[in-house]
Length: 89
Image (cartoon, rainbow, N blue to C red; front, side, top):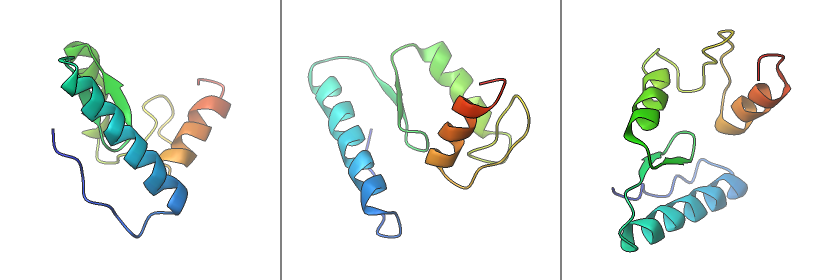
């Protein structure tokens, strides 16, 4: 798994979150753990079935589309807020 290059169009906070995410993934891999990572959502999976199910949610055409209600969010943070605040979340 390759760490993605730093995207300077992202906020400092988002870049920091991504750096911590990739450091965590690298640490797990160096410890011999099998991890699968979603670089869009910054989620780590140890179960291949859960990872595949998650990745399939991105195949619907929008990285941040809610499969429960169809809401499309602009970024990861807005999507997480939607999931937490929506009645189905």
